[in-house]
Length: 427
Ligand SMILES: [Zn+2]
Figure (cartoon, rainbow, N blue to C red):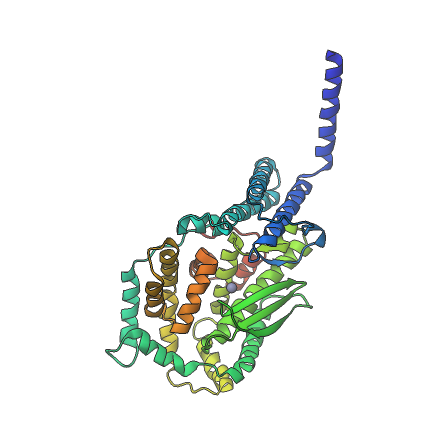
């Protein structure tokens, strides 16, 4: 009996050795990366906002679907996969394999949180954002926004009246007429693309299509289709102010989301075969990098006064608008940019129940300086996307700090082409 037992053990041991010799660390990781993609696509069958883009193999798409959301088995799959990747990351000799494994682990933490959110199992705002996006955004008291508003008070004409009204009066001079939207947007995107091509070589077949849509909670969206193509949608529900032409051209297009997705697809998925990159889960740390870099892309492509100059010389004439007050408007917009953090506080308040919808509306109009129609949209965006709002402002600040002042395009290109996690931005 003893001899037989020994024999079986030796066989098992030998076959283990044989397998581990055959299967390299990278092959093991590739197999786990496929499981990650399958799991993400499975969650996306139920939570339709979960998968923002997928251009990987069709063979990884789920073939069956349960009648009800299989919460427990999905959470168990997340935990098992994280444990397998954790063991691999601890034992690998290759740094790249470890980086990939740790990147997928952080994405999976977000899967777990999103699965729970989808079934109404909620956590406080900061705990949610760290699990979904890898960071907690700074908290600002109302006094902080009041200080910013008082600096606008001394800047804007019409002393004495409420600052939000005076800001809206100035902004209303710069609404793009609907029949000029397409010309203005196409011109701004072409210019943003030209400026990006001065620094990066993009795939020859890269392209985008542009559509105008209604009934959305956002102002613009990039749907990345794979093979270096994007569908950029612009919402026509709201009045569109002139600065949005360059903002959306850079954010959704060049060097923002369209370029980010292309760099990942080209450098990591096509050239290196990293299948995990072919799935972009919206509620994940990847979105902090995506939104932060897309917003940073605006000031990268149009640094200093260049946005003002291009708007004055090219976009305003195309829109048939007068440039009187433009300098003042851009100064006010810079302060409005800092005020953007007030939307995080609105999200915190609304989601925790400490702020009513009326109070939220007042904050968005008084501090975020949105007009009423945009403030109403913003509340619906917060309800749909929750702590996602921090990715725009805190993401931008983290990316800005990470890039610094020198070799900005080079560093930005590297950020867009590597599996960077939010925690490494602040190191
Ligand atoms: Zn975006």
